[in-house]
Length: 363
Ligand SMILES: *Cc1c(COP(=O)(O)O)cnc(C)c1O
Picture 1 (cartoon, helix red, strand yellow):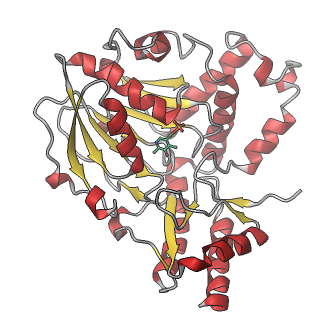
Picture 2 (spheres, helix red, strand yellow):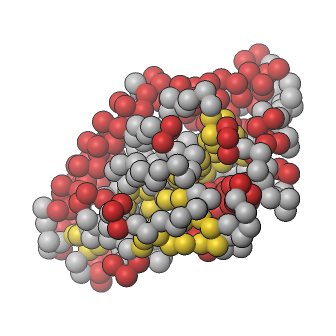
Picture 3 (cartoon, protein in one colour):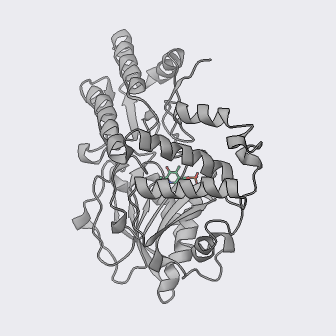
């Protein structure tokens, strides 16, 4: 068996230890004689898995007691509709929500929210090809917004907030799909944090929302019951059948993260991994990353070969070394290395070694 270094943006690499444990427990979870996939979500076995996952995530992110952790389906894109449907009802209609447009994912959020409320784009870096995050002092927030939406890590464009912006009393909503648990965040500064699991947490199909209590209970009447945070919270994420196997794998990832030293230790590793790659890209004219240095993502590193006619040869040579999924998103071209929590520094080193060798051969 050969395990590759998988730089996919998502679904993405998972810790090998977690996959091994899942394999060992596949047919018989803890003497139950069943796979987790076969269990009732209301049985005591699965409830214990769910409660441990919730507890461990709360501990890892230091989620305050006045926040609910919801395990949902629908993905990050689903949340683009679910968030406005749950939040704009707190205001007289039609309500306005503020957005900061920093890349493809916040762009998708803006488009979807327009179905449910007025959208004010408070700041945008679109004309500069999303090469930076508009500084907070340039944002034109509206007077009485229902919420302010940001995407704290733009998976495609490769920009990441390195701080939490102050937005006063207005709830700050963050799409953290692609960097949740990769760095320390102060959850109390946010009204809502959401993310699909398939980047940094577990398998696709699980979505996590962390919601402050006072923002629950205001869903529009058109909101599907399965996505009304009040019903979901009152039923411990079991108003409908939650993605049970995804929750189980996420729980194993949370335990793995705790063994690694938790989020602060993970953040230090991610800083080191990102520095290794960016420092090399910056040291040569053969490759380039176009993002302002203080906005670069530690998780998703887009880069370009100066001679783009070498792209196919680059990808083919990478594949020979078991360095996979390095092709950039089709909307931006070039290359992209996603180096999530589960990517070991050895994988980033192998990529840098390859970058050097390829440059030697073709530079
Ligand atoms: C991947 C991703 C999404 C989309 O998630 P889906 O599960 O495909 O709906 C949303 N936002 C960000 C930042 C992402 O990286």
